[in-house]
Image 1 (spheres, rainbow, N blue to C red):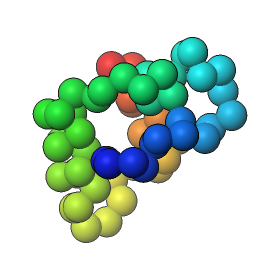
Image 2 (cartoon, one colour; image 1 turned 90 degrees about the horizontal axis):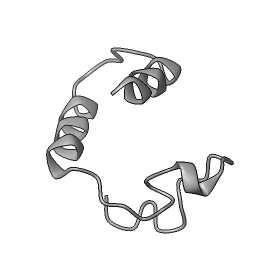
Image 3 (cartoon, one colour; image 1 turned 60 degrees about the vertical axis):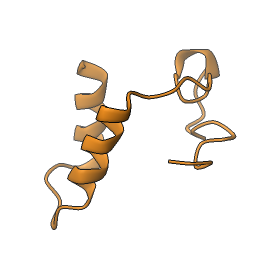
Image 4 (tube, rainbow, N blue to C red; image 1 turned 90 degrees about the vertical axis):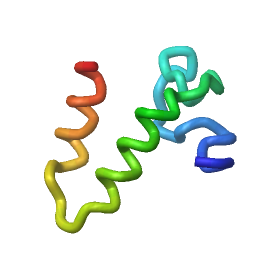
Length: 57
């Protein structure tokens, strides 16, 4: 993801509640899985569904 989130995730929430905004590294396997899923054609779920799914992990 490189510098994509160098200034936080820009979602207007408390930065302390967000691993990305705190600068924590995400699991490389999880990132690879997301990148692979993103490369698939078509949309499997809405953005809101994705957020809820990630929060449930």
